[in-house]
Amino acid sequence: MKRPNYRRVLASIFAFALVYGSLLTLLLRLESGQPNSKLNTVQDAMWYMVETLTTVGYGDALPVTYWGRMIGFVFLLSSLGVYGFIIGQIANIMGTLREQKELGLNGTNFKNHVVIIGWNDFGQSVISHLIGAGKQVAVITKDRGHIDIIREYYTSDLVYTLFSDYNNFDQLEKSNIREASIVFVNLNDDTEKLVYIINIKKHFENLNYVVTLDNGNLKSTFMHAGVTYTISKNEISSKLLASYIYEPDVAFFSEELIAYAHEADEYDMKQLLVKPDNIYANTPYNKAFFDLKKDCNVVLIGLVKHVNGVRKLMKNPEGDVRIETGDYLLMMMDGKGRDKLSKLFHIEEGI
Image 1 (cartoon, rainbow, N blue to C red):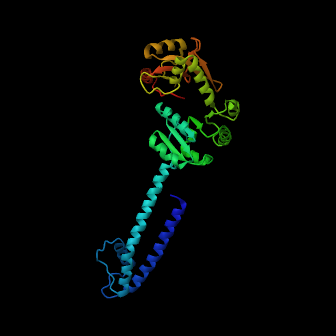
Image 2 (image 1 turned 90 degrees about the vertical axis):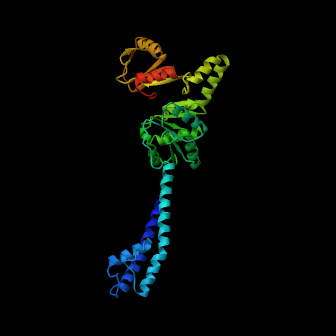
Image 3 (image 1 turned 180 degrees about the horizontal axis):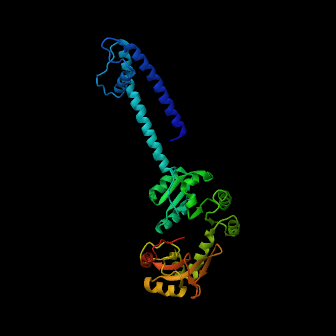
């Protein structure tokens, strides 16, 4: 509920208390001590006022004087206004609470999720793949109309939406951004993205950031600004187009691999963490390669290690490399292999 509404409610309550307090005092003076009067104490007068305003009307306490009855008429007629005020305020509070929830102002408890700053058709396509991979997403938009569109497509347990100005960094805390696995800055142009990255890193320095670029020549600039991953949409499109021209089957397979496999016969590439209880921890790479192929029909194609705090990607490494706890295994699999692997590793994909 907004602050101005609180002030109006408090002012209304004060006005009611002042008016009814004055009428109650006057009623008590008129009735107290009168023959057959049952309104002789403050408690009696308050009981009569409450049962009249609520239209209960027990009839156990009634004014006996002319002006006392006039005050009773005021209580009776004003009960309609009191009910209207109470019902109106309840409806206002419920509406405000509902709007706060729709706008995401109550916050979210998502963790290890993806935060997307900015909403458009490209962001919607990204969200679809993330949800398919079992990832929760928090979308931050400054366009109120986007909230309704997002709610039509996705449920609140998968996608949290926050209506906020992008530069209101205190408000961004409601998306639990500090617990996010990565932040995707999905603004309109490269210049706007660069300026925003510089500003947001002043508030959330240790997060991972990813951007898509229209101009691939700006990759190094964004990397120096602190972006973890930069993707040139034109560069990817041109590579895929060229591949379709001279090796169309490879291109078709590559396009399938970079997307989430929705069907059992579709292939996908996944990245899975090696936990201490993983059966391949402290195992030679070549043994894991053959075992995974034999048992799960999964092809191990790479390994990621942390070297001095830096992620090192080893593409199809030599067989004597050992897999250690904390490494990531890069694998190619279909839907059936994914199900077998999830039972074997007991962990979801992704970093």
